[in-house]
Image 1: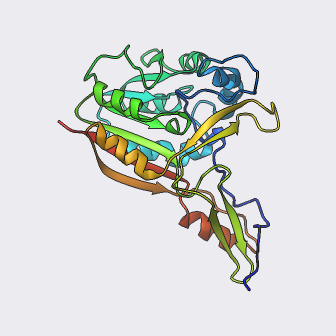
Image 2 (image 1 turned 180 degrees about the vertical axis):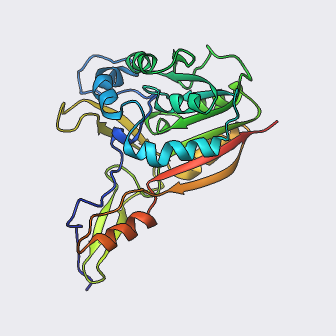
Length: 290
């Protein structure tokens, strides 16, 4: 009988759904303890904003800098002067990168405090608004040439209103780029690394995939236990179906692996092989039909 044990080294383990890799926030109510007063959606991120801003910084986490932002800019194909919407802009990491390639940028986020920090860190030319991604009445129809939503959809209870609003504010043939933790391999509490002792291979174990899940995530592990928000797992078909319903046509799908490499050691080869084979992120580009 094949023997298996948990992978012994943490050096090569890409994280799963910690907010340090999620970069941006929008919509989605914070988790509440029973009997606690009702919170406004976005309150949890207001409370964690200062810590999160210090963690992510001016240019984003290591994963954002090396993988996510370059890939997002490439898929968006932004031309100088184009109007681009950053949905769930957080404290403005992607917005600043978009501004840097010549876009006229508007960032929206539900967290008042994160928007304040985005304004403090960014050039005056970038416009930031506090708004729910599913209710963007502050923005006019057919205003934008492109839009991006990076690591925010995972924290939204419903994606249909977000896609509906994106379709409304985008011009015909406007591009929408979505970036997620890969829903097939990075499911909080339902996926993990394992080790096949006989074959000396690291493998990815997935307990559930097709079932939609609502999962509480600790915003500040080891620092402020109990400060949580929700993440929502959905199979890929839910995103595709919801995009098609709003007239979007997907014309690119990419799966991005971690850029990291393990230090030399007895399991480094297995770690590097697994990291390259099981993507950390999923990116979709959809075009609004004319």
